[in-house]
Amino acid sequence: MEALFQRQRSAFLAAPMPSEEDRVRWLDALRDVLATHQPALIEAISTDFGHRSADETLLAEIMPSLHGIRYACRHLRRWMKPSRRRVGLAFQPASARVVYQPLGVVGIIVPWNYPLYLAIGPLIGALAAGNRVMLKMSESTPATGQLLKMLLAQVFPEDQVAVVLGDVEVGRAFARLPFDHLLFTGATSVGRDVMRAAADNLTPVTLELGGKSPAIVSATVPLADAAERIAFGKCMNAGQTCVAPDYVLVPRGRLEGFVSAYREAVLRLYPRLADNPDYSAIINARQLKRLQDYLDDARAKGARVMPLFDAPQQRRMPHCLLLEVNEQMRVMQEEIFGPLLPIVPYGELDEALAYVNARPRPLALYYFGYDRGEQQRVLEGTHSGGVCLNDTLLHVAQDDLPFGGIGPSGMGHYHGHEGFLTFSKARAVFAKQRFNAARLIYPPYGKWWQKLIYALFIR
Image (cartoon, rainbow, N blue to C red):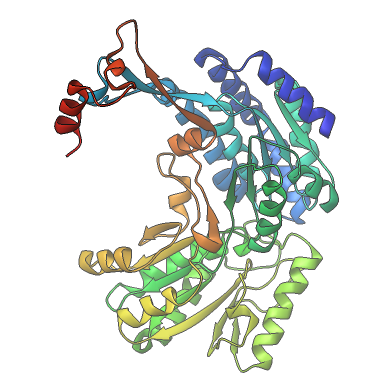
């Protein structure tokens, strides 16, 4: 792995500023290989999950990957163009500009929940910025990792883009490499370890973590609207999404109405669990046990658990609502990452906002209500990585919006222009030619014109 890193570093030093044409060619090759092998990618991801809905893979992995490539190609020339900046009168004649240079070798650590899109999304930004890239795939998605390694090797030499496979120890060694930038997507606890490893090399990091993303239902929004959109976001990939709604805040007087509307929405989207091709499985037995432990802990501490399906099927876990929850339950302390949805009652909107603000800042926040004044109160009165008003998840799919967390849910951004900037060095360039007015302020000091300069410019 270290030898591979050195080969990429040497290749970058031999061509440190790839042209726009080169970068577009790389992105076109990436798009073509993904578009051509869609069925194989769908099958590999489903194999890793024990069943992943083919439509979910198309909608949540392949489509945003292809759209992201198209968007980058369309806007790359403008992104690469040096930005002219103002030079103050005291420093004339001169010019100033910002030049966006590639960083060098970028490392990307990919999680298991969306193993294609969370590899390709940051790869797009890194390639658009002109970098070499090493991707570490999750050991929990071996079929997807092997396939992506083979496909990318068809279109990129290893000193341009390389896929690294292996277990947790390989991942730790990967994080210790002296990358020029390291992007990690995964759990907050692991993100801390990645940041410590990167610190030894002073490697800058982008951390896309998680947390407990709340959905707030207002006192006036039609419950059917809110329930359907929350159900879509929570059920996608069986809740194994970093921006899935983690719990729902509902006005006390609307609690039973919301539960009924939510149940109807889920059963309309997924009329059955068994043998339903649209209903994805939990990735592995370890994650399934973790979720079952959450349920058992919540029941033991007084929660009312409401399964929306009669029985599981292998690793297809029934979607469950949890009522009468409290802060002593693990399901209210840790990111759920599965088809369990606690419902928390509240009185006034200020109480709901205070509840959110008393907890670590989440990766996403969802508000359901059509009153624009209340929408603004929520936006101004909370912090989160991103927000959807009257929807879930879809802010992540917008090519022209940055994606990233805040505080425990992450740091830094990528997607679109922000991805290009993350993987670029914004290099300040100040230029003068023969005439040098700055000689007027050179020592020795005390000359009359220097006193005039002080009078004019230091005030």
